Image (cartoon, rainbow, N blue to C red; front, top):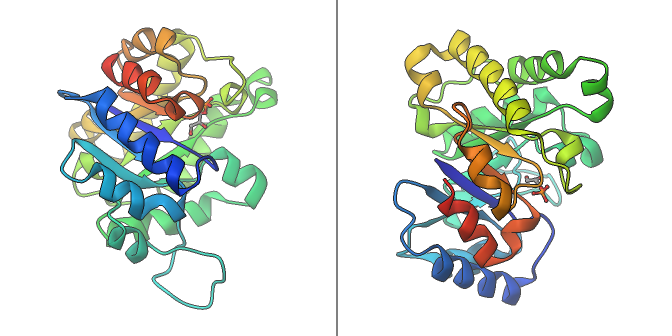
Length: 247
Ligand code: 13P
């Protein structure tokens, strides 16, 4: 199980430090669950210092596909590793929706993440219109095919997929456990075709979209749900820890 908190554009440096401490204290010993927090870029170093020597890992929310260069406002993989990151969220629907992120761009970033030893958490998911039109699997299948083209994680712990139906993000509307399981099983089949059964079985497929302490256990209880990518509920240490405990 992998449970990651996506803090999005929340918390200044002091608040991030305090939240990281709260997460560490609330999570305690997470057992078999890998717990990761993904604060904004400016807080990565402060959070890294706060979680040093604890079981909580560090991730970023995005990165550029090149090592360095004239790319004003961007942050590279070597910068993230130097800040203490092991994980990076790529292709989040908010990046696709508001910042023009494409599957091809995500694909380049996945290769770059792997080249620098980062574990990409690759987000896929359909909109409500796409689901209503019966195109959810087609959309997610295409996102997977294009963004994972050429991906070579090496071992299953070097890649995670997050299924985040856009209609469930920040809306309070969660996919039902059946809906989540159905899509996760479909994703597993696609991963199987690309990476073979051993890797596909072991890769973490996370569910994201209005996961709360009250619904986490049922979602995580589904055969192909291997954890969660948590937005709003990751901003409270105790809620996030309760979700991690459900893993
Ligand atoms: P919420 O948990 O706030 O719905 O956000 C999910 C998400 O986008 C995590 O990346």
